[in-house]
Length: 294
Image 1 (cartoon, helix red, strand yellow):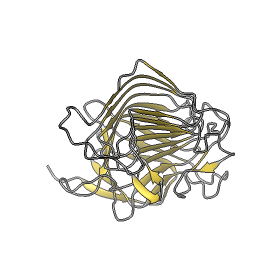
Image 2 (spheres, helix red, strand yellow):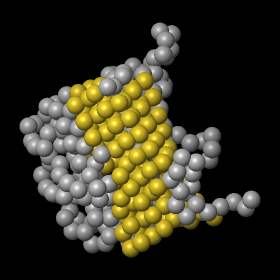
Image 3 (cartoon, one colour):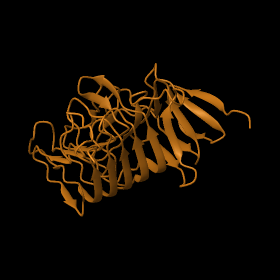
Image 4 (cartoon, helix red, strand yellow):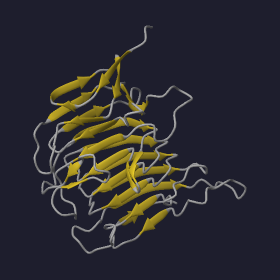
């Protein structure tokens, strides 16, 4: 079987673009679906469709990252037997957490920030608006591995970053593995999600902020005793915002049927001192958690 052709992708994707499983796609730098060069001004829109079974690799030197800008869509629908895999471009055996950026979805749903804002890190990940039912596409049966890069102190790209993503978006059967920062983080938005796995991430498994009000059901967080972040690692980390303000909408997500499995299976197991809590619920959040084991 001949090796697959590696296609280097960089810059802005506009219009309808399809990636197929007979090739491997290498993300070089910030690869954007659509473009919003300044806050509130969408200049280009696109729809990226990724075929089941496709592999996408993130370039380490340029911090390869896939960013779906407001008004654009990612249609990444794998299957149980042919998942779509985002992973490191480093060779097998040489991959590490933080080898590349991750996947970023930016939507037009509400948050409790002021207007249209930029995601932390300053990479033009603008998000926010008034369209609660906004649609950023669909992700099903997707794995995201070895992602999560620090851009500035306490400002990182996560394995899957969601900025004000709307309820018209579908997120199901997504596994984030070996991420350097959070496995999943919501900054506001209304999107619902099912069947999420955070596997051996370094920071938080599920981080919720800035007025996220969606519903998430069937989640698993599974930790490694050697992998924890200096900021303190948690299963859930949930805040209304960093200041603990009373700005609306309040962070009031509903989380149902979760299992958060800590790294210390028995008393003799090693545990990094930076581990904190199964659930850190703080700063004026109004989250609801049901039928959950930690």
